[in-house]
View 1 (cartoon, rainbow, N blue to C red):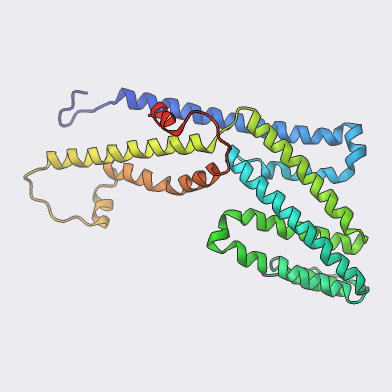
View 2: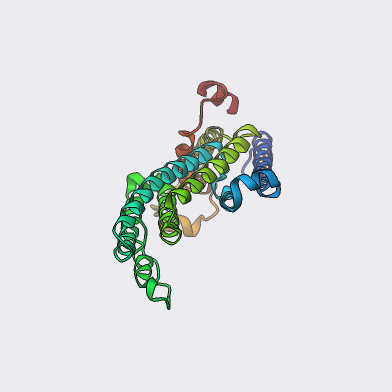
Length: 306
């Protein structure tokens, strides 16, 4: 309590900050869970209510199945995922309609071959499903060739933030092109897909932005301040140990010796905590770029958080 050797030091201010930070983080998680439930409920009303169901039909079920996939914890992440989904679906719909119309003009024999080749260059490798129909011999080829382009591009370093968009391209294209081949109306399938995406995108953004929004910028700023506090505490602990052991002869320590002999060293544990949150900070920084301007200026926000 008094700072002497062998005594226990309790930082009341730091302890209270940790308690308040943990309580705020838990409340944000509860708020996020309720917002997801509300978004799913709003989309479900389009089927539960007879009027909207007569307008949209069974295609609106896709909105219920995927609205939770698009709904992210922060506003920036939701905008990012919504942009990837909207842009990927729009471009894929245009491409699928063009390929389907081209395949229809080639005749029933060449059409499935063109469809299979196009899926090969759009998708990713998948397994063959057995079929007993002679007409589905070429359909097996298109299921085998769920191709290479999107899988290759989404692993390129500069395209990693848009990996979700490439997945949207994959299953949207396969849905439109295959259903168009069987039902003969790819344009109707593409339009149904686009308006269902527009509905769930609007609902997800409306609920996430207007109802107790959780901003990535604020989360990133808090992580930034916490990391500096941990770094300052680690350096302070190192200086403190150095002054306490000044004048004593010690052998040179390697990292392995430090981990074996001092696993509970306060300075090392604080440094390790900083290294573990580095990846989370990168994700939040990428999500922050998608958020609209809001709140006080950055300098005032840093002063308020500190």
